[in-house]
Length: 216
Image 1 (cartoon, helix red, strand yellow):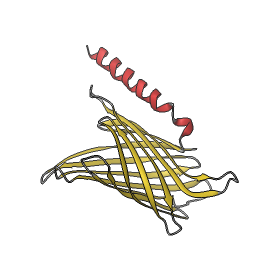
Image 2: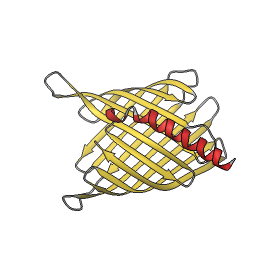
Image 3: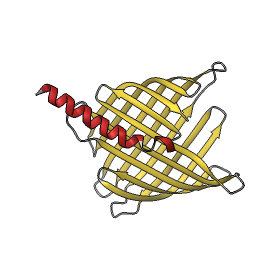
Image 4: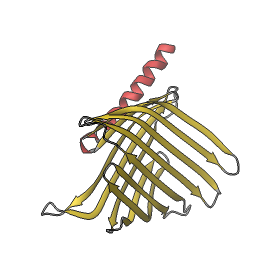
């Protein structure tokens, strides 16, 4: 019975890894992480569109595809976020977001801010969905990669993702941290994922472990 459960979990992991791997060729970075509660994969694409003359345009495309599962028999959690924005020279922009989760598809609109200077990068938005729930999402991604020598860099990334449902007065707060080192296109180190959800009283969960990442 125990071997059957292990085989089932291995098969399930293989299936969703294969499914996510179909988009790897179109990804800018791939991260695989394993924590004490969950294991997953994270594919990201983040780049400006170019015109026929190969010049950078104000239009920016952001794509994030994540899948993770626990070490039990729970369903795999999938999430796909795709956004197209028009960005002004001061970093502000107008963004449209398409979010696809296990629960279904949700379109969102709002404002965005993006800045990249040297080893620092910040990208984030404030959007609301256009469904009747009118959830409000605040997303922020901060990355710092200080140079150590020509081959090595430090790697620090922090994400905050609070979502508020005004109808039910329900909060879902997510924080993700990555701390390690980067050698050419490879990065790795410690990962910490936290989530709090609820109304007046929040339920806390966490996933602590390690990650490895490759930038194409």
